[in-house]
Length: 339
Image (cartoon, rainbow, N blue to C red; front, side, top):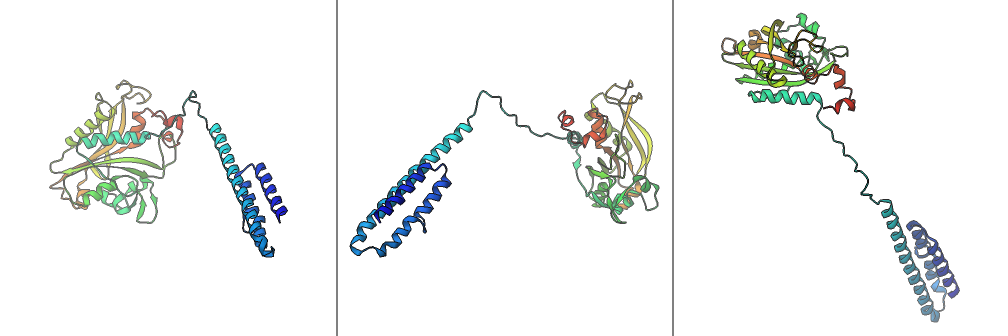
């Protein structure tokens, strides 16, 4: 029995001395001290030892166990110390090396233009409201004086989901929803994404953004509309900007107009940006049609209003001198970093 214990002890000591990992040490511990380990089997065979020899054999087993456990602890500590030193060597920081730049994102040029635009109109007392992108035909067309047989419906190239539900072609449905509430006076802008079945090119996209503006109150005139848009143009494009109104037609406004601003690149002299004319078209506008007011529950004999629609991408392209709308959506970081 003594020789057997000595052999187990020497074998375990030798194996632990050669162990190179904590996993290897654990395997030795289990093989020697585990429930089915060699030393445990010796203890189970104590019943075969003569009663007078059992105390002596038990002492020998305990001494062997204690020696093996002490060696295990020492080897475990040594391996952990070695692993920590290796890790510290691998993680040494050279303070003379240049630092790693933490790249941060920033606002998209569309968002920059929208923030500037909202700042102008909020400063004039407007409220920013939003509406659903999936809209009813009733709000997108009918309440805006575009009935079922109106040719403007064909011109819009609408994405229909069902006969009555569609992807909105403009943000004007928001003005119909706001007027329908009957809360006066109204002074809002409604930015949002709109959808039309257009081919993608330098100036068109099936998905783009508009900012609808609406004012309804007593005594509103076309002069209020002109003054508002002139103020917007000067604050958005620069204090020297001039504004020109040209007669136009929209089903939901009467009278209607398109608005040009003097080219802020050449000051009206004529250049590539304004195609030599000195003027750049930026939006459509007009006095809210009496029928639209009436259909939305507002008495046109008491209240008047004006509305305008700004293409967000259009003013962003102009303000930042971008010549291709597709650049706004291609996510080319070389382009986006310029903003």
